[in-house]
Length: 512
Image (cartoon, rainbow, N blue to C red; front, side, top):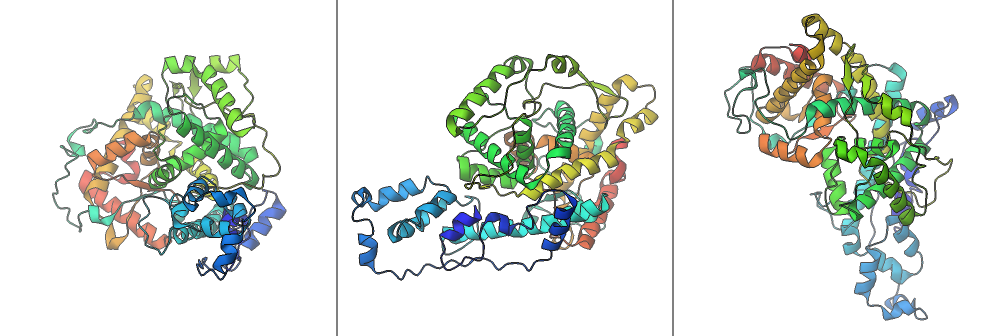
């Protein structure tokens, strides 16, 4: 995408492609890892500068297409046509002639490329777009450093804390003595009952199990396929799938596992997801991991229809259709490694269990990532699951220890405790501000798995947040641009508030 936008700016060609903006686009072998590490130390490039002063005589512009049928089209019509083009296509068409270059720079064309929720003030929408691309480049740089650091340590580090971003204007201040403040969305204090005092629109119990199952499949998929060239193809396929979702809102479309992986990365960034959906598809594309038994029986035909529509629109095979009868039989029960020693039924899931798509060794020249997330987000999200396994593996065993006579109900008890812990987290988000203007609240991994499950259905998640808190809580998985000591201080302060508010330690809240 970046190569397209810069070709529209003849005075600013320090970037050749979006790949150049990112720290490294290499395979995962040893030599390339060394190269990636070296690339991290490159000098940071300067932000792009938009130049709007045209030096061509008006007569040349008017006569540029004198022998073309385009001269009969009003400029207003050409602008409407150009608005339908991708940035890559705008790049190419702006090279045709000066007249097309002038039209391609029209502000109305770039308005549709910008996030409608973006409140940044700039002289033009093209400048806003270029600033957004530059911000993606910086984000990619920062996350690559986090990625390299995790690969070196293979353990939890402060900058890998999952975070909740909340606007400070929505919060009341706090000090060492907790004040009694009204929280309209919570008619009762969470400690008033062992059950949840509020109701969520999402079926948390079933979604948590479906999500953990998905994450285990993602981890297996990532072992052999997580490389930059694969990420790019996954993003391209996800973009095409979402276009079909926008074109056929009433059609049941089934994503393959690789597409679902990218969708997960997008869903776990609610502000980003909302902005991208409105900008690209003009509505919020809803999602759910769960389907009912009737939808499960129709899933194979829905997948066939998805293959057909994808091939009709994009001229490429979506995914070979292979039905494994043995898999259908064995999917009914599943020994979940995160809920130790507990056999549980896996709900029917909305995605196709795997992908047989043949990833190419090279990308087409028109590749673009029109979304706000970067490839490193997808990679780091997989590390979150590894960290979650380390920190949460003892959940099932701990429940057995505390409730040795309740083995049959251990899963229900685990879900009850997780839901309650998440309710307390929402209550804290609704009631308290962070300290010294730092606008992040850090959940534990136990709370975060429920939070991730809640975000699986973006429309319901937004409704619940607005009802309970008054605004939609954003989720920021990787805060690489925040000082680690600040993260640690914020986390410790939140734990202090937690103890005062709920009379329990936040880290083991889901065990009590």
